[in-house]
Amino acid sequence: MGKKVYNFKGVQGASDKSYSETQLKAIKKVKSFPVEVKLSNKEIKLMALMAGIKSEVGNGTILRGFITKILQDEF
Picture: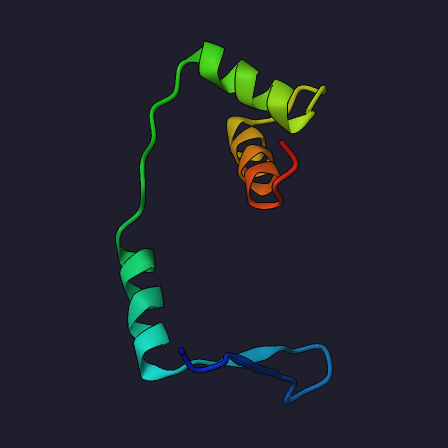
């Protein structure tokens, strides 16, 4: 099993996290390798429909909403 991530507050209004060495390496890799995905307008519209987004929002918001729905098993 992996080590737990601990959240702590050192100063009022600030929040910090403590990571294991392995978790920190993984976070640094993710930050250094951005992911680019090319989607068609049809795919974006379908994702918005499946995520329940009806207003005009940006593609990033649609993608985030769609992934959130998938992770929450709402389909």
